[in-house]
Image (cartoon, rainbow, N blue to C red; front, side, top):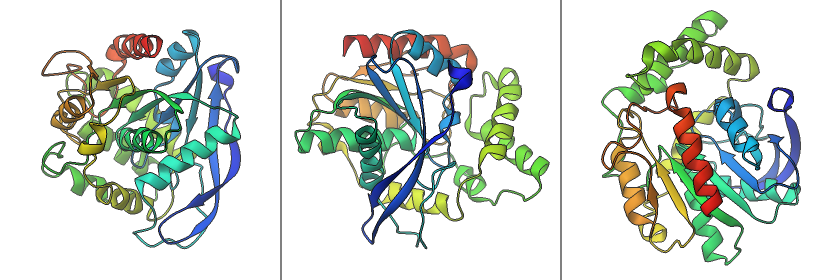
Length: 301
């Protein structure tokens, strides 16, 4: 099942504020085609493999079909043109997701997004409501924020470390990625997670490190996304918000703001600390609980 999941590719029409073009998008599908689909959207400079495979496996085993993809400028997805920093928006990235659903003949889907993927998922739900499409069955926003600059900020020095160039040497690059995972990830489970972080860094390096300037363009899309709070207040889609109290990249205040903005949204975990011991990652010791929370949300939705 999951172990045999392969990278698939489709060319879709894609657009930005500056241009239209063709986007060769990389995706994976796991689970029975007849089961309800769950679209999972990853974050900044991340690849579809950054979703913990045990989490995907549990969702599939619960009776769902999981669709993951590399965002434009990430992983094995290409964006074929010369691209200035202001190349596209979160709304453009959300449309990439809907066009993938079109390609797979998926009319409606549960949507789960992490970090920037949470922002894209929020945008997807907002646009879905505004267009009366009804394609989003439920929304799950993980370690994300509303776009309000007063919440969800990073700790001092984190952005500077993320902005550093990855060394060209393979082993140095892997060490660099492991250090970044440690910087933004769980501190409570740091020792236990180190082997997983190194394995993920190695797999990510060997699969793809993304595209030149891609991180800058994605950050520009995030900063240009504006404050979604007012639009989130209009959502009626069942929503689950997951955030950890050790997140140094997107402070848990961003998760609380998301929870407070979306009517009747469900908050995961401790009322204040959320998923206690979780940083900007999903540590293995917490995965069973996170998976159970997501699956319960999908079933209720």
